[in-house]
Every structure is written in C-alpha cells, then in structure tokens.
Amino acid sequence: MSTELQNAEEAEPAVELPQLSRQLRPSAKGPVRIVHLGLGAFHRSHQAWYTHQASDAADWGIAAFTGRRPDAALALAEQDGLFTVVERADGGDSFTVVSSIVEAVDGADVQRLADLVAAPTTGVVTLTITEAAYRLGSDGHLGRTASDVVADLALLASGSGNPTTPVGRLVLALAARRAAGAGPLAVVCCDNLSNNGTVAHNAVVGMAGAWDAGLAGWIDANISFVSTSVDRITPRTTDADLAAVQAACGYRDNSPVVAEPFSNWILSGEFPGGRPRWEDAGAVFVADIEPYENRKLWLLNGAHSLLAYAGLLRGHTTVAQALADPLCLQAVEKFWDEAEANLSGPEGNAAELQIPAYRAALLARFSNARIAHHLAQIAMDGSTKLRMRAVPVLQAERAAGRSGTAAALMIAAWMDYSAAADAFQDPLADQVAAANRLSGTERVRALLGLVDRALAGDATVVELIEDLCGTFGEPAASP
View (spheres, helix red, strand yellow):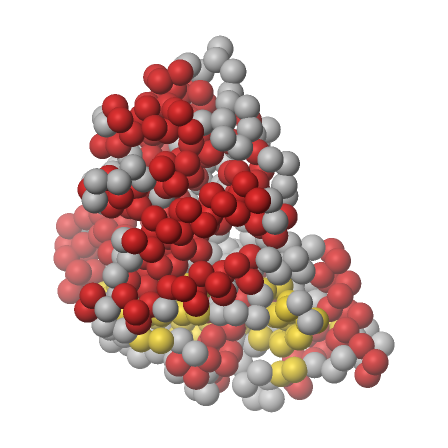
C-alpha cells in the first residue's frame, strides 16, 4: 500500500520520520521473508518499492544487508526502516514512504545473515551486489585466483572467520540453511548482467564447491536462481534532495532515494519458497528473459556506458548533458542501430520488443535534466560492464560481416577515459594502469585483452579500436 504525503502547502512542522511509523505501518512489521544483499539506493527504489506495492506486502518483510560499509544500514535503522522514494519528473516530484524494509543490517554481521537465510520462513534472497562482485572469469566460472576469493575460501575452510565478499557470505548463509533443514528458496539476481541467474548460480556454486562439494550439490538441488531484467534510473541522493523532502513533506528523512517515474522488472525462474505479488506493481514474469535482457543491456546500459566515457572526455558530468552534445548523441544512435540489428524477440518475434518505442522512451528518460545521473558513477567497473554492453554487439556485427564500429567506439572511449581519469575505479584497475604504460597498438591490445581475450587476438579489431581512440578527446600520450 503506497502512502502519498501532503504537499508543501499542507506540511506540518518538520518531525523525524520514525514518528510517523504508526501512521505508515498500522500493524506490526511484517515477518522477514526476503533477505537482500546490497542495500543501496537502487534496491530501495526498485525491489523494496515493488514489494511495498504488492497486495501481500505485509507478509513479506525485507531484511537488507549493506555491502562494503555499514552507513546505509545505520541511517535506515534510525528511521525504523522507513524511507521516501521521490519520483522526479519534468513536471514535478511525488513522494512515497516505503515500509517494506523491516530490518537494515551491517553486511559484516554475517551471523545475522546466516540466521535469517537459515530460517524456514525465508523464501527469497535478492542481490544487487554490482556486476564485478560475482568474480567470474572469461569462462563464466568463479575466478578462484582473485585475492578476495582466495581469502574467503581460506576463511571458510578454517571456520575461524567470516567471509568479506557478498558471494562468500551468501555461501556461508546457505550452508546454515542446509544444516537447519530449512528447504528450498529462490536467489534473485538484480544486477545488470546477461543471464544473471546463471551468473549468480556459477558464482555461488563455484565458491561452495571450492569449499564443500556436498554443499554445492545441495545448492544445485534446492536453490532456484532467478534471472531478471531491472530498470529504473536512480542517481545518488544529494543534500538538496534531503531538503526537498523536508520542504514538501514536513518531516526529516536522512535516507530518501530519488528515481525517475519509469520502472521495469522482468523475471524468469521458479520461486519454491513463494514470493510477493510483485505483479501488482507491474513486474512481468516470462519464460524466456534473454530478449528483454539484451534489449536493456545493449540499448539502455550500453548507451549509458558510451555516454559516460564520451561525455566525461568532453567535459560533461551528467547523462542529460552528454546526450545534448551532438557528437555523443550521434555515437549513441549509431550504437543503437548496431544493437537493434542483432536483437530478436521472444520466439524470434522482434516486434514484441517494441524497439522503436523503447529507443524513443530512452531519449526522453535520458533527457530528464531533473534526474542528475552522474557519468562518473556509470563509468565505474568498465572492464566488467563492457563485456555485457559492448562486446556482444561487436561480436555479432563482426559475425554478420559488418565492422561493428559503433560498439568498438564504446571500447575505445573507455580506453581513453582510463588514461585520462583522475580517479579510475575498476576491479582490474592495476592491470589497466599497467596496460596504459604501454604505447600504440600494444596498449590497445593489452587493454582489450582485459575486456575480451578473443577480440584482443583479432588484429583487425585491434586496429579498428586504435583508429577510434581519440574520437572524443586527445588520446593518451605515449610514455
């Protein structure tokens, strides 16, 4: 049930959000039946928002765990789990207090995570842990040589400490569920990865199998991994957003989240432990999710990455600013043309994807200047993101006998950005820095190898990308 709050003209003097708890939660908090890893703005504007809208929301409380830091959990706990979703449209803002998170927890509290996942009433685990956190290698399986994976496996084997990665923590929690005989549940991946249910499965089973083969077998037999396509632009919250909520609603919220009015959630998979009625808020359940995943990953996320690297190189800071740059817009349109040529709909019916309408809607969404979606945020973890957003389109274009220039341009822009950025965040940041100390073709080949080894071995593709470097700004000087 959504609670819309009064406008500024009617607002009472500011109160603390927890003081409204009785009004917003007429009955006791719902039982924890969903455990979420990755408490952040997107989870709150998307999965928590969908759960709040469900007609059976009172039966599906969420316990949400943070990732690297406890800050979000501490702030949300002060408000009894309540927070405001600000839907920001060109015509103004609307405000909804969301009450589906009934427990906000520091991710380092692995014992609490294990207790909740092991509880027989828990039916769903959702994930927004970022693409890079799954630590899969180019073969699609867990990369066991990553330092944090090695450390987690040592901790699991010794039984003397708690894992630090989201996957390691989830594996330990699933081991507790197995020991408790609590039965099956669904793990729902909500990160921007193609076939993300399989990605989550491979990461979890890979970590479990490296520790305990019996646990890996139990997970395969009892845990469903659901694939999803998620979509809602959710920029970082600013101090101005906090002030806007207080001015409009008459209460202080230390953890509001701003989002565009548009939202989309498509899911495919089994829910052996039950699930909320997310369809009440517009979620769609399908047998084959791949066409919808590719449409979103290539058209929306691909355009975002291209705008991030090109826009930052040209001095822009937000998506709306970059889209208003004719050079950036032209690059996006050409990339969309390549992506569209390789999209097919359910059962081969591309018309069901409504791609022309989808592209037009994206232009309108990206142009919403009131949503300050920062390019620096999108630019993070590019070596991982490009594997899903640029590489498949480039490979498909090459396989069809076409150049794939527009997809290659996205990779070239990332390369230029990687050398020009003052602060470069990427799971392969050290390898990127080493590659950038090379020059010319060798530099391009080394950087491309971090994204896709097969493409790095294709001299024609390497030459194409090298020629495209510098399109949005001066290429990095050779050492």
